[in-house]
Length: 151
Length: 386
Image (tube, rainbow over all chains, first blue to last red; front, top):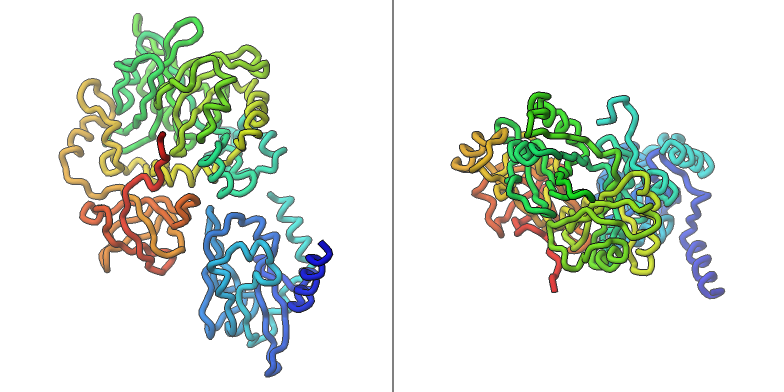
């Protein structure tokens, strides 16, 4: 048990991704901002555990090609459950620099580990304006609570 | 699609669903559980052990009196007058041009006093339409014709209805039902006593029918005892691995079983022959609305035909996707999902007859991308019978 605990905290440290420290879009994508070797800001994008819980029964993920440019608020991919298809929206303007293509065949990774190995894409940010429209964890929690109440 | 007063309709199990974590959706004006846990899990449970489902939203119409048999024979596409006690038939209701207004089950039973009656189970989404249609064809002078009276009652809200589906359904139900379920044949049913104090000495109608492709039963019983009896089923089902399932699994189960769903595969512009439901139309004998049109349609070449499609990729097609044969528009999908049993995307749709042969390679336009698919035999899934 203690060994497992150690491993998991170790992994979190390496990937340095904690839900509390992420930014969130209204459409439930999470965003982690880092700086690459060239000094450019790169956004790692996934979707929140709340959204995954709402989707259930994932059957398909469609992700873009590296090199594609994306705009904030525009779809960059699709996630599909038994019941329905949902778009994945880019939280920022920029270019896709990396795609987590292993997800496509291992959808369970998403629910097991939404904030670490469950990322979708990395986007080199071209314009930082969209970042100011994102929520911090507390604001996002509020939105989720509101959605739960509305249901 | 809501009740006439604008409120959403609730089954006697509504509170139970809410208390047990169900996600509730509006289905044809009813607040129904779409899933309790995961749709895939509930689907697999039904295939391997058994699933319980609240199907009280389905319309239940009761017909009795000396004129009932002939009245129904003149309303439904299927023969009714020759039905024997306990027999159930799948039938259609067609409009004057032969378009499908609903697909229904008609059953013939005796009550505890030995009086015969028929129950027609209709789709929730079509109930009001069919009730109006019945009234249109059953004016007072016909309903009260001396010696041929027909008493029609919409008992939907008086009764509840459960589906008990899956390999363990007989084992679960037998202790609660007075008749021998093992010897009950498919598409047979009976009004029976329910052998549990929760039923308060009331009876119910049990039938070996279903919408999942599994062996199983449907049980209609009085609304006041429904919740208590449901809890008995849940409790007795627990050690057998039988669990409550929502409408989400019901949809994937029926799709794998190749069964049409009204509003998807069937609508008033669909004729029975293109839908593959010619078997449900008896065109000789009693006259019913649409019979003349069907006699003509039967002889004409079909414009399109219902097929099963299996996609080669992993991206599921949904309803309303265009189907192509090369560059030629060949048809449209009506339902589609990722099959939980086969683990491949499956769909149903209509294509021109020249593209309906099993094995035909087609393309389905899934949101702008043409995914390769081929025509396969229906059903997609067939249970192994021992």
